[in-house]
Amino acid sequence: MNPPSASVAQPLPANRASAARTAGFRLPVLATQLLILAVMFGAWEAGVRSGAVSGFLFGSPAGVLEAAWKMIQSGELWEHANYTLWASAVGFVAGTLLGTAPGLALWYSPYAARVIEPFLVAINSVPKIAFAPLVILWFGTGVISKVALSVSLTSIVALLAAFQAAKDADPDIQKMMVSLGASRRQIFRKVVVPSALPAIISTFRINIGFALVGTVVGEFISSKYGLGHVIFVASSLYDLNTVWVGIFSLMLLGFVLYAGVDIAEKRLLRWKDQTYATQFKL
Image (cartoon, rainbow, N blue to C red; front, side, top):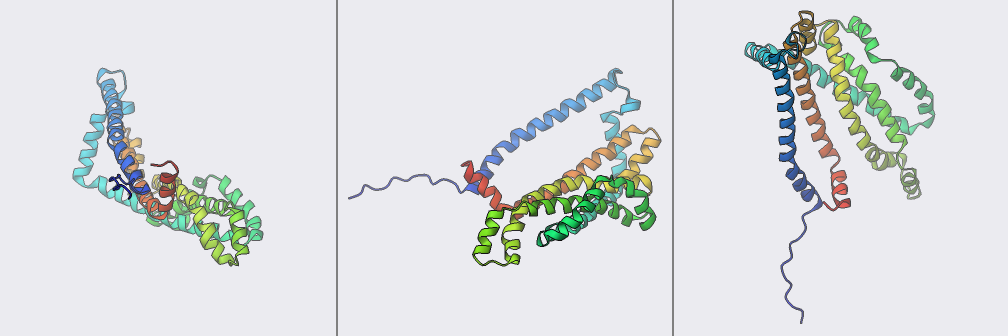
């Protein structure tokens, strides 16, 4: 007769264990980050008050807060930030889709890929900001030109990343799928796209910065709204505190867009988190 089995604590599923481990680090990491910020801004303010740092050339945390509060009260900061966020988000999404889809599609035709690749390299080698005057001329000074600049910066990066990721899909798995009678469409859906997704998602993070750069450059050149316009006007008036308000606001917008990409990654790459947790026994 077998002895009664003692109650043994069952291990958590891999994804739950990984989430618990991540939650355990969250508070100490946040506390350390806040401490670093407090030390940096405290040293900056102390340097300005003591005269070791020029408040005229570098501004001061107290002056930045005062300028930000005035812009918040008047609604000016939200108006400019919303303009930049909307143009950057639309440019990011449109540029990423317009680049990723043809980049993956080039997997179907190695001949077309070889023909197009030199042109892609040539376009990518040119700083996209050089096209800004042309884009402003073609699309005017409104928000459409800012979106177009963001698209021009993000689409080529997304296309090259998707093309390279599709080209690097495991050839052995593709051969096995062929031997099992799979069609090219099935190989593309079941092997190429899942294999390329991690690289494509990583490119999303890079394209967040490019989308913001495109929008802000357009606002520098010709615009009545946007954080780039705020920074440009304030810098011409030597108002460094307002310049910092614009810069810090752009950082916050970057965090917002980055959080959106993070959510998309968790939904599209759930299998990756589970594989990672299983591999390292989290």
